[in-house]
Image 1 (tube, helix red, strand yellow):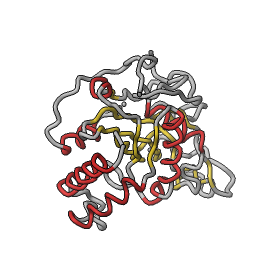
Image 2 (cartoon, rainbow, N blue to C red; image 1 turned 30 degrees about the vertical axis):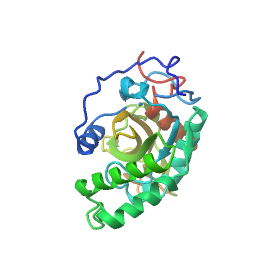
Image 3 (tube, rainbow, N blue to C red; image 1 turned 90 degrees about the vertical axis):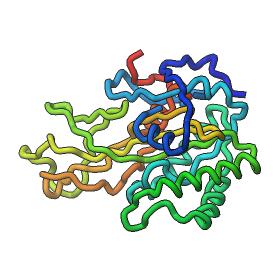
Image 4 (cartoon, helix red, strand yellow; image 1 turned 90 degrees about the horizontal axis):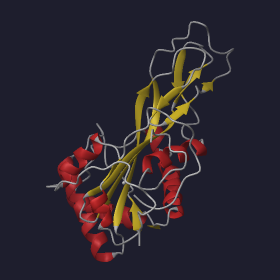
Length: 278
């Protein structure tokens, strides 16, 4: 059984009835925040960009199983190709984090096989040309997968792990760092040139990857959603000395990934040295 005695509800949001998964999807894409047991060993001091994750305590209290499965698809649109290549590695880190917190994580094929079978019936909800999501078929497929998981397995909840990308900015001055979604990152440098020129425009945006978690019970009610920053995906191009380029080592820093995961799961899994302002 799960226990929340050691995990105070730092953030609470009153659960409201969910009329459809469509409302759920919209809410999850807009909000950020879920509960468990365990702790992380990553993280540092206070960071004002730390997100306020959403924890539906009442729904969590109703869970009678600690068996979960990590969805093999995004709740939102598909990740960009260079992020998609790292999804399996990131999901493996999420699985280890959940298991360390006391959850039983079933093989992802329990979800993916049922998803693929449902796609044959309802059609692929992702337009291969535009990557847009057909919400009607997406909802039908998710509901079909949920029904089979509930009837055929002991899985009690589903965790979606979307890697999203957003624009962030480096701070001006001598201390060139960027802070986003609870983490602090220094500029990455790439290329064989002589370095960054004095004319480099540090005010331009740089791309960064963030972990977005959405956790649902078998009624497809959201019990938690959260975000945690992982790493910048652009680097300073030392060949030109004046521009950012896509990094060759996108999401290869395991410590940065683990820190983002820990922030994204707080407070459902309490994070040591959580960077929020308590």
